[in-house]
Image 1: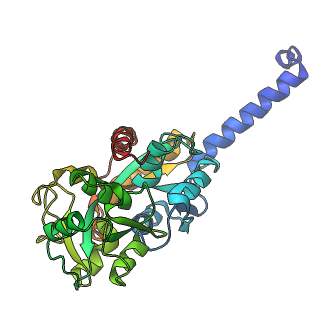
Image 2 (image 1 turned 60 degrees about the vertical axis):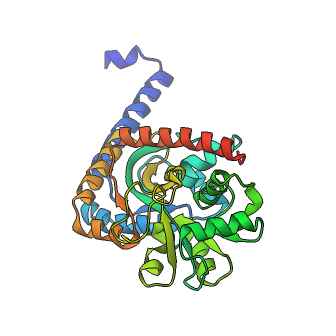
Image 3 (image 1 turned 30 degrees about the vertical axis):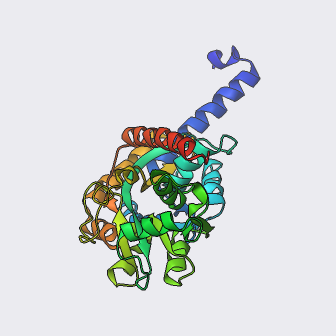
Length: 330
């Protein structure tokens, strides 16, 4: 007791509180999770991010023995949901289904965005999503060259659906126009709320074409409701083997456009919680159901560690910063 008598009361109280908080944090990490976890999808239901989150949730809730709640908080090209997670407590119960558009494209384009590309805790990359350009089956454009010739010969006549300026669905057509040495308005952008709505616009013949993640269009392509003209992967996608690659159609520049999903947490998420989710992702990578889910929606599994995920995101940020400058949409 003589030791404590030498410590002023305010300092002693601070010491006790710090000790209690430290013990509480340690116990919380050890017992995590002890309640349902919410994965925020910063886009509308049915799109690429939503499908990826639900596919992961099936595995995660079996491993963690807790319910996984998917919360769609769309708007502002993914910024609203992303900001929500950034502001969430770093307790592991609110996580983010990160997407290329919301996590690197927006920060690369908008210097006044309320968050930066690295304002989160990186947990792990999940999968890559090839971008595919599609038209309606009734479209006169049978192959990619038909489409590019029509745009070149009739600038400003054709339109395409996207999820807004500066998103992946907008970058693809803009890069295509730049490669054809055409002005940005040579094909008219029509914005929709998300990737799934952009696909519906092609199905409904509201637009002439769309270049979005394969995730949103694979079912319609496989059933013949959409015609795929090109994919942006270096190799053909096994689910749609007859569709040529960007290199095969003479436009390898399009390989720069690729979608992806990753799991992020709020800033200052503890190492213990990150490690817990690293274990979940390692098990998901070997899980037949998770692999099958990726096949169903056109994802290419690519689990990465937290460190490698941060490196990947950093390289993507640099790439899209350069690309947005080149395309004049920064």
